[in-house]
Length: 317
Image (cartoon, rainbow, N blue to C red; front, side, top):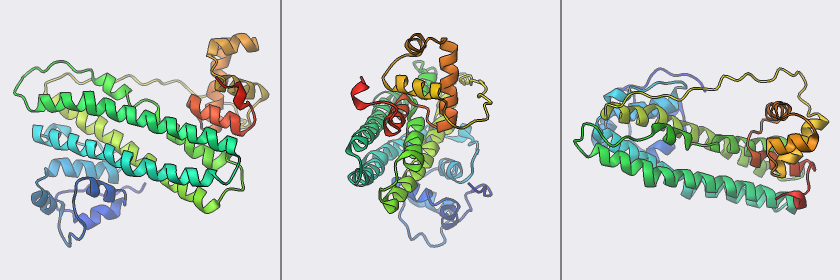
């Protein structure tokens, strides 16, 4: 994405939208109507009762990759409004984005091999269900806690495990990426190219939007909570494991065997025992498989294995 000058309170709202059309969905979730003439961000904040610090932070996260918002300037009321925005976003994804994408996938898959259609529909259903569980976790556990603490004058709130909040983002981004790669590279020809292209555009758009949604939670909400409640700053350590440097991008016969066993539900140890190799070798093969195919999740590997005839549906658990 092109980098723009930071958005400020004096930036015209029309110019804000021009930095990234995805901001239109942000305005929709905030119930900000179009037709704002020459209004600035400050004007809109005044009209809709929003904090300039909050709105500018959200806009800049969407408009400028790598933007680091200053969460320390957010008030308790800002936190409450931010949580409301995130809840509205959940509803937007659940009621509009996911059903629209699934409808297109369902129409496309009617045209081809129904065994492929069955597994791809199940993959998307599983992904959608995982997203709903993630949203429910936040809406029923995380957000109520944060709201309660933002509405109280307690100096030291009941400790909340921020790490747990971050970990529950899970591998949902990997699964959406796997769905994209499946439709882009592995779904056989013969399906409607127009509908297939439309699906891919929706997946790319949804993936970017969900990434920004996660950034708002991680870079804005969590630091604001830490600051308001005098909590020590916490950050999970990142794994610096290096990727394999193998030059070939083609799957080896052994890697195809490993894919088949992963799809069947075997653990790394079970695969090692069955193929008479070490667990370390299995791990290396799985790293190479992820690098070469662009697929990381077990569900994605299963879809890949079925479409490429590496495993039979009857062999799956």
